Length: 130
Image (cartoon, rainbow, N blue to C red):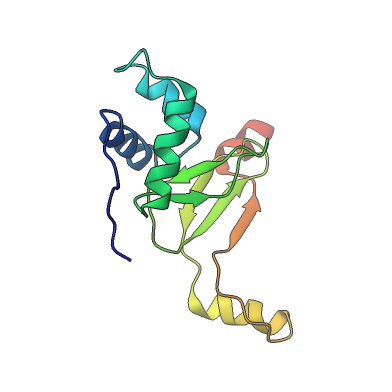
């Protein structure tokens, strides 16, 4: 897929850099960071820019937050995620092909081709609970 930005505004590169540096970010998180440089930016503008960047293939969608907010992903290639069921922290993971085959067998040889999302508790939350 060719990645072409249809329109570039003064915010486009900054939003793209924020998403890539944070790896995963909601519009609210992006707006918070963007306002450090552009205090005047509106939530609507941030939404429009992220939607355009997503449509142009420059950012991806990650699993949503616990509250259901969209979360953008700085890495656009197909990949898997781990999400902490306690704090909601999200990180990229790689699930080995053999594990994918085992999952397919467990599903009765069903075919799946999308990313997997594994939930559990991150180390930080585990330590906090001890």
